[in-house]
Image (cartoon, rainbow, N blue to C red):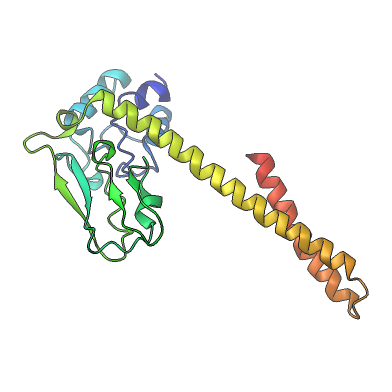
Length: 216
């Protein structure tokens, strides 16, 4: 029983209600014995049964501390109130919200997993939730093809965020290198100790940036 096998049985809503940052992290925790099989509300009772069959652990009710099984919800943005802050775009784990700074955002409905992560970050409360599967919950409100697509979109989201982080660090490192070069070119300043202190700070920042890039 591997994390890959467990992850394949999860709905991939990436809602974090299991207590982990994404479905894959929860799958790894279950595989390691650090998490129970009843912590995924979107999967519902059927999801627990699937995990029980795979892991050999006894099925049990969903842990109420993680939430309750329910219908799939769809995030809807009120265009009249949206201020274009982009916070919901950054919060969406599957990149289903599109828009630009200071422009109205909108949700691509078929791609929304109902994770609700966009709700708390909206500063003007212009995002609401609609029940799009009345009478159906858990895996009855979701499908394996939808889960597979959500997994792929989340993987791309993580890759995009990591790439943006590295590019930003590279820009900051380039600026720091220019600053260091500028200091070295102006050693004629009357306070060499101040220059040495600034050089030490910049070189330490560059070293940290290089270490992070090396670790990535």
